Structures are given as C-alpha cells and as structure tokens.
Image (tube, rainbow, N blue to C red; front, side, top):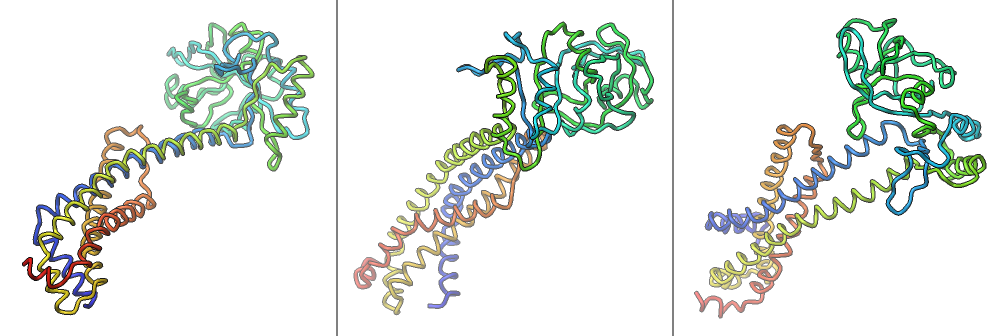
Length: 399
C-alpha cells in the first residue's frame, strides 16, 4: 500500500463522518487554543516584568534602611534606628568596585509653573542619577555635581510634567514652586515611561538635600549603587554591607541586587507558566479522550473494511498506520484550528486591553501543532493495535 493510498484512506474516513470528525477536532482545538492563550499571557507578563526591571541595567544594587524580617518590610518608608545618610552614600562610593552612587528621597508635592498646578512625585536625587538609572536629559542639563549638599533650588522636569505645565514652550530658566519654595528649571528629561506603576515622566527632580528639608526627613529612603562590569554582585553586596556595618555598628540595612530580583522573578514566572500550561493541559487531555473514543467507535463500524484490507494483502503494520494516520490527521487539524483560535483571542485581548501584555511566539505555534500531533498519536495507539490484531476471516464475517 502506497503512502498516497494511506493518505486517501485517512482523509476519506474523516470526510465520511463530517460532524463527528469536526467535533473530535474541535475537542483538540479548544485545548490547544486554551494552552496558546494562557502561554501567550504568561510570556507577555514575563517579558513585561523583565523589561520593567532591566531598563535600569543589571549591575545595580539598592540599599534601604532597616533590616528585612519575616514579613519583608524594610525601613524605607519609616524612620530607622540609624537612618541612611549622605555620608553613608559617600562611603559606599569610595569602594573600588563601585562606579556611581545615587542617594534618593521621594515624596508627593504640588508643583506650580506656567500658570498651572500639578501634584507629582518629587524625586530628590544626586547628580549621578542619569548614569545610575540610565535616564537621559533631553534639553538643558541635569543637577550639577555637588548639589547633594549645596541644596540650591534647582529643578529638572520630567517630560510629561513639562508638557502639562508649559506645553511645547521651553521651560529652561523658568521658576516653578515646589511645596511653596521657588526653584529654577535647568533641564528637561527624555521620556522614560513607567516603572511598576510609577510614572517617571510625571515627576520633578531636585537635589537630595532639598528633599530632606522638603519632607523633613532625617535620612535617605534608599541609595542606588552601580558597580563595574564583570564584578561579582555577591562580592559588591558583601563589601557594601561591611562598610555600613562598620559605620552603623550593626547590620541594619537591606541590600537588594537587581540580578537577585531578576532571578527570583524568573523562578516565579516559570512556575506560573508551568501552572498555566498545566491548566490548559486538562483541556488537551479531554480532547485526547475524545479521539480515543471516536477511534474506538470507528473500529467497530469498520471491522469489515479492515477484514477486506487484510484479505487483499494489507499487513498488520499497514492497518495500524492507517488508524494512526487518521488520528494524527484529526489532531493536526484541531491543533491548527486551536492555534488560530488562541492566537486570534490573544490578539483581540491586546486590542481591547492594550495594557495587557500578550506575546504569541513561533515557539507557541510549533508547540501547539507538536502537542496536538502527540496527543492524536497517543490516543490512536490502542484502537490501531486492536485493528491490526483483528482476524481477517472474523472481520469479514462481521460484515
């Protein structure tokens, strides 16, 4: 029996029962669609989170006051026994592996300028912020070096804040009021977007010493540290910790490495993707049971046909492959239909909810077709083996 004859046999068997074949393929298709859609959402979420955290680079440490305990809350938002100071930031900057240090204080303030008032996030930082956060200046300049302590009333506007206050007019040299005090605008930042829901463009950047006065704080909220390429994150973390312990007399700060957060997020997202795939796998299991049931019914209906094929010289292996081919064809049809359905649903979700991260990759397409084929072959094995074992005479007699 030629391969073309086998294909003709399988397709004719599918066409002879269009409703049953459609429902069988639909069972696989729904399962594949569920898997593709869920994996697309999981992959989109993973890509979104990784993009959020890597936009500031990976050679980054965050030092916050207060030691994390079982409940994981650092002292960044409350007063610590020994707050982080600008002197602590200087001591960290003196370490050989450290490239730059950016002390940070944040708070919500009202900004008045250009005849408008807007309540935004005041990000009080040092002059090294553009290098540490990979944030560029669009016009003018950023805070000059040394402003961490001089605390002159200088301000740099985020892109969105500039447009809200001044439209397209240049704000350089203008005076804005921040918390009631007058600040001279010396620059505008390039658009940066959001980080975990915080709009970095709808913000004003002022010297950190002004932030300590503005929000009446004794210490910094955090110190962001970048270290040299090739340096070990663990080694730099240990060096920073030793420095702070020597200055504070106790290990009272939390040091979080960017790579550590990425590793944890990667593990969490991998588990999430696996769980999502497992949920979709239940639908695939149901589809596989459907193919097994339909192929078993087809075996009983075509017993005489099998006997005739054996009488004409078809071997057991050929009969077995005829049934497997039919099962594989049904599953592939269902897989392709499910891929189109799942991909279309993912695209529609992204159109309706643009903020929802969705990513359909070629890997998903190959996985969908491969899994559907494997399920079809697996479900068709038992009926195919039973068909091959039928006695030709008994099969013809059943007809």
